Amino acid sequence: MPKALAEPASPLTVTVDSRLADDYLLVSAASVAGNPESSVCLAASPDGTLLYHFAILAGYGPSELQPSTTVAGGLIAVPLPAGDAATEIVGFVDSDGSVHACYATGQGMVHVSREQDGEWPATAEPVTSLVSGLATASIEWTQQTAVTAVTSDGNLLLFAEQPAGSWQANTVNVSGALGACNVRLAYTSPDDWILFAADSSGPLQMWQGSGTSIMSSAVPVQGVPAAVANVWFTHHQGTSPTAIFSDVNGALYSSSGFGATVVKAVKSSDVRHGSGMIDAHGHIQFFGADGNGTLWVLHQTHLDDLGAPHWAPIFQLDTDVNYVTAASGAVTASATTMAFAAVSVPDGHGMILTGRCVDPEDATYRVIYAGPGP
Image (cartoon, rainbow, N blue to C red):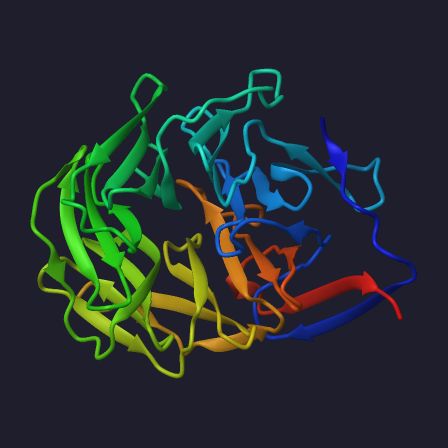
């Protein structure tokens, strides 16, 4: 049953700030439950026309946030089934345009999809055992999506759309090497992929895989002086798999290629949480939050002679942002899908702040805050 989000206290205080950057609009706020690093996500339709918001909300559980003109806050939360004690959620749109969500619970990973009438099912059962680190990987050639996670025994869960539109969960045996790892997948063809993993104790590790099998031993990425803590974004760009990651000190890097890897350090960076998207030019736009709640943006300008991204200097975009997530899936970049959601945790209680990034060439930045007045 849809539920209206709480109406904010009155009167409202609204402030507007403009500066050089992308368009960015903040709207209704709501309390986040679960793991704030993984409790909010966006999903976009492959044709670039629709954007969907998902979150694990206090008092609601895993939910889709739907716009509504009938409630004061402008949003209603539609709870998803079998989501008790959910800690992580990912949403995505499949190659046929159906909307899906996967979330990690104490009973396992639950997968649900909207029915043909647009409603979510009333019940659902876990499709796998316990997992953590839910993420999505785009298969751009087929406009399909794969969900990845780490199993309780340290292997890779690959939950992927099949050619006939069904979904299948497979465990990829990595000999338990992914325990305590943060992992991301980048597809390099409809079947082949590169697995990136970081565990805060050593270098970034890469494996080649195909289908549901590992095809190589782990290859460490050299050139990073500190242990690598997190992999934030992966993409197949040019002829190379590319990853954006940070070390235990928050310093940001990009890695391109497999084996003969090009590693670039991003000067003056301190990223504790981040996410990326691909713009209409095929370039990476990366958003990251530092430990002080400052939101930063890193723009790719072109590919260099080695086939690696060339980065413009990272610069500050906003404040009071602790976690950020971008629209997932094999997405056509548009004013609708070039979007991200930010979560701030000013007093330990998360607040969703949904945002909209329009054309980077627009060269304007507008932030509208609406919050309780004094």
